[in-house]
Image (tube, rainbow, N blue to C red; front, side):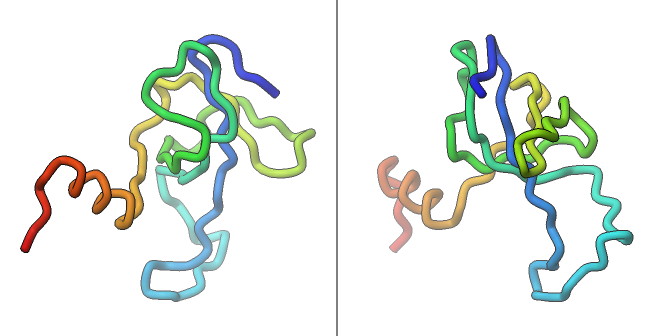
Length: 101
């Protein structure tokens, strides 16, 4: 599937474990944000790329049920944030010359 315009295809990821490793029951999850991975982008998308981890409001986008996973098709402006891993953030910091000693 290839999104048109400024739309993105996100594979939503259900968070079932806390950062400390505690398993969370699915019925008690009431987080207003959902984490996902960008799987495809339209030609007008400027701020995210395929493979980026992102945050978006729970319930946003059109659910694509026939694709086997929880995929959401939504406008790029619906995304709240791009999540950088610590390793990637450190690489960016190093390229900018801001390495701490």
